[in-house]
Length: 222
Image 1 (cartoon, helix red, strand yellow):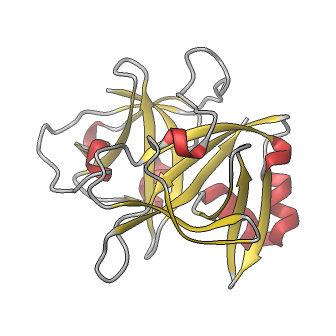
Image 2 (cartoon, helix red, strand yellow):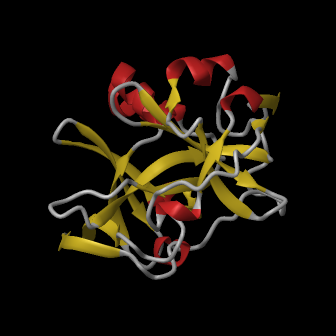
């Protein structure tokens, strides 16, 4: 299986999540090396960055996750991971990973929010069990994206023309930049393009009971 790396996100405890576009199957894949998350060592070993291409081999074993993550979760043999090239790619080419016009469209209209404040949707999520994918993208103009700091976390506000969404940022690139130099460094880390290919992903189930998969910004490419 060959993937174009689209998402590299920072989780907790030194764990990372990698996702990619399978152009042959026209679908998103979340490869899980030996059934686990990626480590910093594994990212560095294979120079895993968005836009790079990698080859890997699925184990064929079933992953016991639930939808929406089950749509992409794929167990792979860690020993078979091989970087084909380092990219970058043209994120807006006809053969680029699929991107939608709206956030709701990217998730089949299953978006829900906990509240609305100043016309901005807060606590945006997809219910656990929704029979859709957990990874998608939207194409938005640069001016449609803002960044703020809230409760010592980096957040993005996206305006897709139909609604404003406030989302946590999980992108490794953007979180690293923010940690080094705040919001100014985040702006410098953005691609110098008038249009953005914005990666969106759902966190694993959260809540009491854990019935909500919250929406995050996994990366911004251009």
